[in-house]
Length: 151
Image (tube, rainbow, N blue to C red; front, side):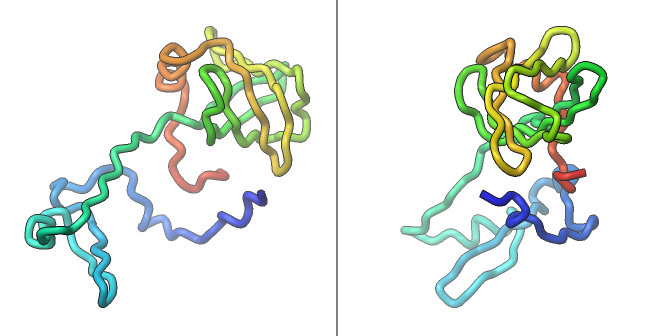
């Protein structure tokens, strides 16, 4: 997969950095047989009809940007796919110097071993923590992956 296929221009003023205030002002896109309608969450009760399907996205963004070190070199990791209780696929910068077997240090209590190196700067990491402890470490030391993602 070529990661650059996902690149697009997004004007800074279109990036949501915090929730809408009031929350009912959050934007909503209604898909109708005759086209699309821009609305807000406050409009939702009047938009729903018997037999409609409402899809709710209740996912949470994790603190997926990690900054660490391999020896004296600084490394930035962007987690993108959970592969197991202690394994994640991630994009690494700079990825050229990372090799399988390398250890990246992310603070006092979290390290990761490079398990596999893939194309386009992607690596598979095996972390020293797992499951809930690993997610707590991401919450503590990670950063939210706000656009621009490659910055």
